[in-house]
Length: 284
Length: 284
Image (tube, rainbow over the protein chains, first blue to last red):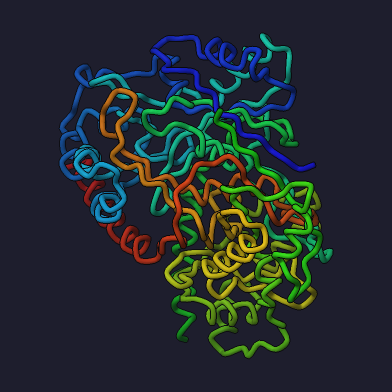
């Protein structure tokens, strides 16, 4: 049988400094005891909260640069300051300018949507320790009033620590993923930002296809596929399902999300070069 | 209870022109009868095969432009010809040049991987009827010798037709998604290219968060999250699981994948403009 089960866990609201592993084990308890091979996907937001990775906006030191970048992007200069501290800023996407019409058209509450867009009309594209993400993962939502949440300092390390604590207390072998929402085209999807106990990328490149030919592909982004599927259950707003247990997957052991920074930068440069050559050769 | 089940169906190898709906119903049969609300995710490859969307490479008329583009990208000029016929070509990504080392490092069979890369050292970035994809979905793998598979002419329409046939024969309400592998950073993931009976994008923008604040986000790419999760079960090579049934999801009715072409083009242009302004304002 080939079947996967994604089970969402309502662990309630996690308060800053709370023991996340205990909250997970209380919820799984006798009702859904963890088993060997389970993958536990957790939103990075709830891990950050448990790790006290909160920044009080009023205590942020804002520089002239932060004011200028805030001015050009429409972002709160205090958020800009935190993003620059957390990452290298590569660029900016004017989300409202591109998609405001689409967003408002689909909003459940137009007024609240307008307020949200006003607060974040753009996002910064950032390189955080070799991984590309938006706003360095800094986020006001689901944070206490006036506070921003930043990503765990080392999300792979957080995943490893949670995995080991869960394993010690349950005696089963697990994998743990940290998930964060990312903009992809016309919407968002949860991708993996931290990983422990599972190989994030499946290594099947060069396998043969149904007709015996070597197959392009097979570098499946397993970790991202797991977090994307989990996002169907994660509470994106006032729901409280920040943890999903995936059961039934056959996977390889591994640690960490591969760094994408160098690859994506090199990829962008080489893609622009080849595109220019291609466009020239279309005609002559 | 908040739980989703992803069940892979081994429907065997689908031959050109075969009745896909019959093959699905034979496999679900008494063993896993379809239920109201099930989402049926199907690889576009198997839908194309059933729809006879195969092109004999030897019968493709190749122009000088196709030869020149083949020369600069390393792609077979016959494949180039088919891609230009299927889509508007926006650019090219030199996959081998960017990531050959990474790919070979992870290959299960190095020789086969080298052969695969030699056959496809680059991919073209294409706009197919307003949707951005690579190589217009044209693909040699899992195709009979010397044949290329092209996407269904209208993937949304194919999804609708399959959904209606399945519904007529089973008497239950379903959603159907067509999935295709796409390059994302350092690997690939299955995204939705066709959709019927489900709203591809969740409309929660403007909902409030745990702390009562309007929340950025909530444009969840439901269809892509479902195909990404299904990819954990799809046979990427010689496995034969091209259909996954997802059970337990609460979703809205809808039709079609929103066109991304205009949005992404506009987005790229505006992103480059804002990034230039941002970089200038970092300093003065």
